[in-house]
Amino acid sequence: MNQLIFGIPLFKYYLDPTEIQLLAEQKFQQCEKFPIHKTPSGWDCDLRTEFNSSRNNEYAHYYNGIMDRFSNDLTLEGGRCYIDESWINSYGLDENQEEHDHLPGFYSAIHYVKFNPEVHKPAVFINPLMQLYSYMNNEVNYGKHPDYMQVDFEPDVKEGDIIIFPSWLKHTVKRNKTDQHRITLAFNINTMKGSTRRVFGQ
Image (cartoon, rainbow, N blue to C red; front, side, top):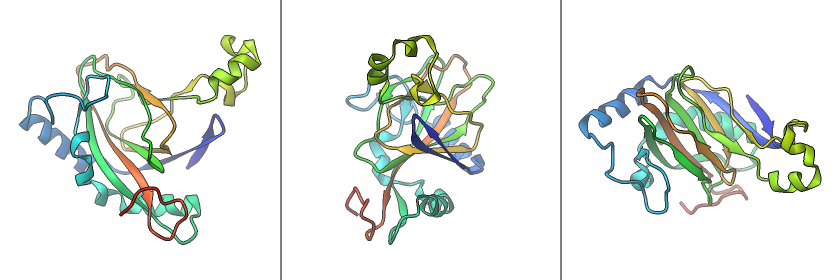
């Protein structure tokens, strides 16, 4: 399934997260400060993340079927999408992630591996044209505007859902207000040689 937010395509799929969830929880139990002792350079947040080892790409094989479906949905000519890097993020009590993007990627994804919609919040996507719209019409600030002019967008997700979005689209993760860990697996998508949209070298 896909939809438009701010006139931008957003894709949604589902993959049973059970195996990845067990793996992530085992890693968490083995290392109290899962899986590193500080956030990566340049990040302004306090989650625990595997991003520094993301190029090992140890989770890509879980998503082969999703990449087939996504490639078909994009109707790529002569190319197939593949995952360039992947990593697990874990959010404990009062942990969050700042507004960021995934450039220079092609598309990026968030898989909600451990997620309770009763207490957890999904990533919030930021309208890239909001500043322009606010100058065009001061009613934007009062909520009287069409959907494409909304300030941000919070997708409706459940555990196992995968959201795929253009890598340049900024998003943020609000503070986790519960001691239930919120675990996601993020990955960046490229396309195989043969597509004019290839971003990374192989």
